Length: 495
Image (cartoon, rainbow, N blue to C red; front, side, top):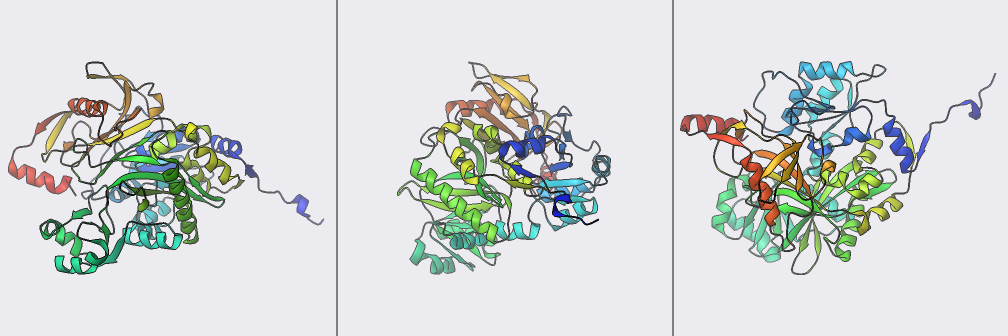
C-alpha cells in the first residue's frame, strides 16, 4: 500500500487572532517566566493555560495562584544582577522539583527571563527547559548601546548626533567631539540600566566625577545634548513582520521617585500624548528597526526609547532593549492589547511548534488608532535617601484606595492593574517587604493607576505626589546608624 500526500496529516495553521487566542487558552506546554518578580508579565497566566511565574521575591504573600517562590533560602553569593537571581532559582532544589513535577509527556517546557546569561542557558538546558528568546550572546551584543547605533544606521533610523570612540581623558573627549557635537554632551557606556551609566557633561569638573567609568570602556557613545523628552515603544519581530504597539511617554529622573539623574521611573499611555507626525515617525522607525533586527537573526519582543527634540520637533532613537521591559505591563494591559492579544503572546508564538498566519498590517493599523488607547500610568518608587533602613512593616500588593484627604487604605487583594476602577484607586506591587533593607536606589514597589501622573509640561501631578508620599508612609523602617554595620550592609545591598 502506497502513501499519498492526502494520507500525511497536515500541521494545523492558526488563521487570525481568534485562532491564536484559542490556541493559548488550550495550551498544554508548561511555560514559565522566571525572574525576581512577575511585574513584567503580569496577567500572562490569564491568557495562557499552563503559564506559571517562578519568582525570588514573593510580592503577593502566597496569595497569587500562579506564582511559585521557594520557601527556604539556600546559601548563595551576593546577588549582583537579575541574571544572578535567575541562576540561583534554577539551581534551587524546590524550583527544580516544581519544574519536574509539571512535565508534560516528559518535557519540562519553555522558559522566559527578563535577563539571562550563558550560565542561565546551560542551567535551563540541564532542566530540560527551552529558553524562548534569542541567545544571550546575541542579546548582549544588541544590548550594547554602541552597537545599537550601528544597527540603526543600517535600518535608516535617525539617532541624536553622536560619535563612537574610546575616551582617554577630558582633553581627548574634547578632541573627538567638540567639532561635531559642541561642549554640552551626554556620554553612555555600552551597558547600563535606568540612568546608572548615562553621564551629562559640559566641563572638566563634571567629567572627572565619572572619568573612571568612562575611561575603562573600549568605546562609548558620545552624543550632543539636546532638549528632549523621552518616549518608549514596544514591538515584536515575527515571521509575518514587525508588530508595533503605541508610543508612550516616560517618567525620567523625578527626585521623588529615583535618586538617579536621567533614571527611568515610569510610563504613561494616553490618547493625544504625541502629535500625529511624531506617532507616525515612531511607528515607521520601529518597523524599520524591527525589520533590520530580523535580518540580524533576532526574533521576538523588543523595546525602543525615542528622544523627541523639544526645539525642532525631530525624533531620534535613544536605545534598544532586546527583551520585555519595565514598560511591558503598560503595553500589555492597554485596551488595544486586550481587544486583540497582548504583545508577548506573539513573542511566545514564535517559539511554539505551530504554523500561523495573520495580517500584521491590519493589527498595526488597529493599534495605531487613538480610540484604541486608554489612559494609564505607572511609577517605579525607589528609596531616594542616602540611608540604610531595616523594614519593620511594608504595604501589601493589591488595590489601594485614596480618600479625599490624601490618605490611603488597602482595599482588596488582586494580582494586576485591570482591577483598578477609577483614579482614586491604584494597584501596588510591593518589592521591598518586611525584613528587607531600604538603601539608596532600592525598589520599594510599583504603582499603577488610571489617568495621568504628569502634566503637559512634564511635571509630576499633585495626585502623583500624593500617591508617592502615601505609599512611602505605609513603610515602617528603622535607620541603621552604626557606621560599621552601615558599611557592611552597603557593600552587599548596593551591588
